[in-house]
Length: 297
Image 1 (spheres, helix red, strand yellow):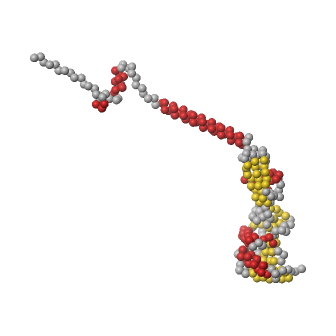
Image 2: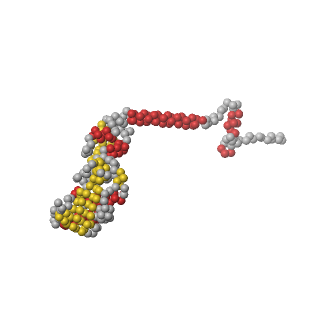
Image 3: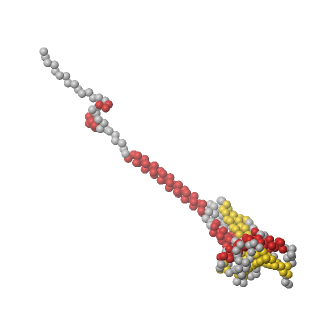
């Protein structure tokens, strides 16, 4: 018998997980087998960077253009547009419109947006003392309005041979050589400063507080309009002259409001008895001692 020759079996290549072909060696082997004809594409990592740079360039360009446009717009606003064409003045005042506008220092042709309204208002109240308030407002695109009100005199202060007319807030409205007859004359106070258009300053601040309390008490009891004089010459015996024939002695500056209320009640009670006579009221916070005398000729 003849011997059988062994049959050689070729190893079969399988696909999938049991394959002899590995991911790393397959491309290189395929390339070598094809004699270099097959090329493997490697991803270009520079392309995303280039796209990102292009996007950044576009954004930068847009930002620069926006800044330029904004700059041109702002320049036009402050040079060509919003220039003042009309200025109106409203409100009651002893000063005419021309004087108010000139004092404010804002004129037609000035730029509306650059005008310093706060400084102009302060200038008006200082240089035109009889202005109680001054409000300046922009009216876009080219208008400006100034609204004012008149300050009302409330006291005349005796100061070194002159007289300072002041309003309720203590602002000096004017300095005169004679007292204003229609408002109370305040005497016996020492001043550090009293300039027109500014608040007066006393040497003793406590006297200013007492005067304010006294003023409020007289106003609340409807006595201020007929008060003719307030005298602080004696610090422990403040004197108030009311009308033509009533004198109120308040003592010190404590409990002013209560003393004025007691004084008003006493005046009303003794009004008929004191008609045509002089009445003196010595006041405390709880009672009034009333003296009635004939008027001296």
